[in-house]
Length: 551
Image (cartoon, rainbow, N blue to C red; front, side, top):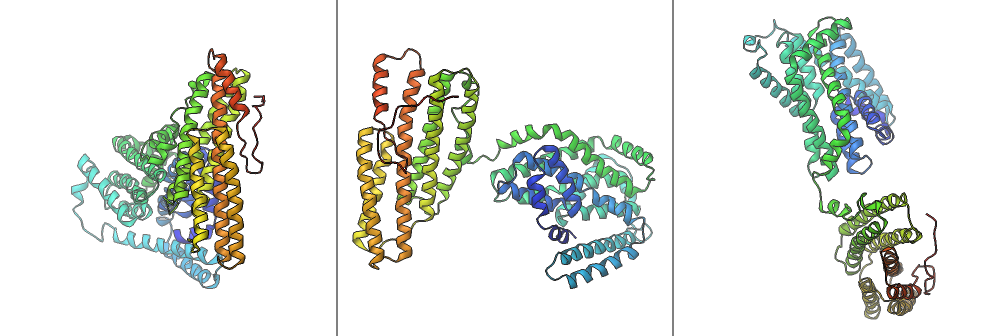
């Protein structure tokens, strides 16, 4: 039934999760609706964790959907209680199987076929309920029920364990709840112990999350752990408050005029505890997400956390600029690490450079938010002029890592021609030398080396084209080598651009710092007048001094 409903829904599950989870309440509503539609909280949880793994849902959004799925899963109890014990199931189930089979046979590849599967599953489900009703008739089987007639602590814990084991083994809370409701309706166990099985079934659904945690990303593990925490906490609360909850169930049944059917009482109990649990957890979604964010941290995530940007520092412009300078130095070190790995083939699978790319992008988002915080303060013109420099530096570092990633992904096969291979190696070594300038940037040296670099690029480009036309190099390999050389050129230019703007930022910070000396100011102004502009589309020339910008 679940498989058919999922296939019939097509992309609806993905669309709902992607667009209906902007706020925690909308996420809860989406979890309720989707779980009720596909009749499987496990399917929804797996899908939600998969979207977290793919980065389509945040941890906060995922927690909302998972909480909602708990309420949606109670619809199975109501199906069994309202239909399974009110109607002649054979009159309902057999026609449903016949109709579903007809749709399956005639559906082909259309959506009609999975709808037929869902209807067949619906019919078989109620045939199963009918069999369980007959099997659990108190007159059909004899068990020592007097041992379990009282709902003392030991019996309650035993039946909670039974609920956990049943749900974990069958991987379906719906199946275990159907089993429990029919057993209670048949007089096998009292309602109080049936409620204990329902509590255990709630906990047993976490086995799906625990399985999903294996070899998953850190965010997936956090979302799964959040579901486990919710279900275990809800189980403890339900056990401690079992007597008041059962009294409230009876009151609700009386108000709604549903009668005193044991199956209906358990369906109300199942819904009640999940609704109460979600209501209690709703204010805690954001704090829980923050708590979970500190769990399962990876090295890359720790590196992605800003170390020098603090909202308290943003209130003091001079300190804020120093913090930006230190954080950008960290980002620069990561960018240079990625560039060196790409140039020297230290990460042949591209995994490390991809991680560096995500780290740099995450840090640059934090830098942008920090700059926005600083701009809300009363600023001098020197600070206003300095802030865009920080964003320019980060943009160039991001460009470095992007080109490093492309360099690794498109690395060509080794060139067999000795002369051409030697030229390519010299080009790569020159790139390494230029990247090393970041630590001790000298404008004149950079300008000279870049002029030589551009000439070397023109030379290697001409050599590759000539080798391709002479058939000394296959055309596909020639194109790959040209792309590699162009990526190296862009990456090196981004690195020197970042170094140039870093020097400008240092000069700007010195102007903002208290009591700068006249000699230092003159020296920094002279340095700024000789910086090199390394935008890829512009020739090498001296950069103009910083322009005054509005905030």
